[in-house]
Image (tube, rainbow, N blue to C red; front, side, top):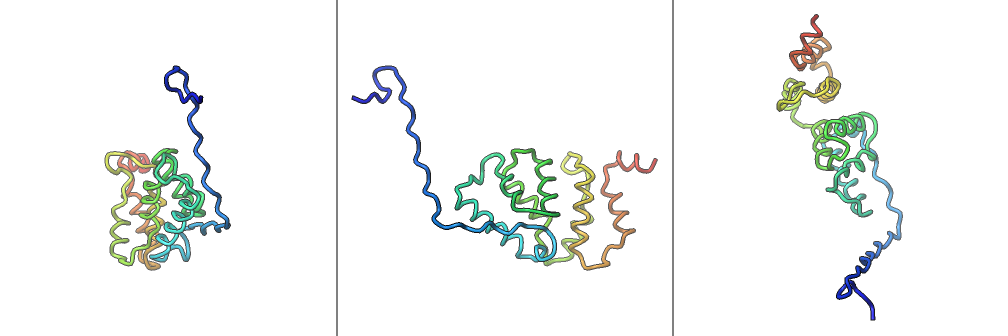
Length: 177
């Protein structure tokens, strides 16, 4: 009696999946990650990550689809949001969540080991893995790592010298002339 697209050459429309039931409670949005103040504590990034992941999972937001990183940007503000937009610029608009989270974790998850942060500060380079990064990303990374160290560890002069040392050779030559 019903034609299911078999035998007559016609095609029946695909069945429409039933929508997921709506949550009966309103789940509060996770706090936005700022990358400043209390968010610089070692456990703050992981706490934010877990809350946003749980929140998006409750609302059935795909975590691994192209562009999923954009949902995570909505739960950032201030310095963290600037870094998230840098990641979007670096990885493209359809960046995955994992790329964004790794990028933010490298910049904002506080290290308990100050020697590690000091080494990272001195290893920042504009030319990385054969690609030249934009200089504003390098400047932001240097400022972020400097802010993680105890006050007066790196004075302004040393910071400027490291900024110049981080520059790509051609840019450095243009600056000198």
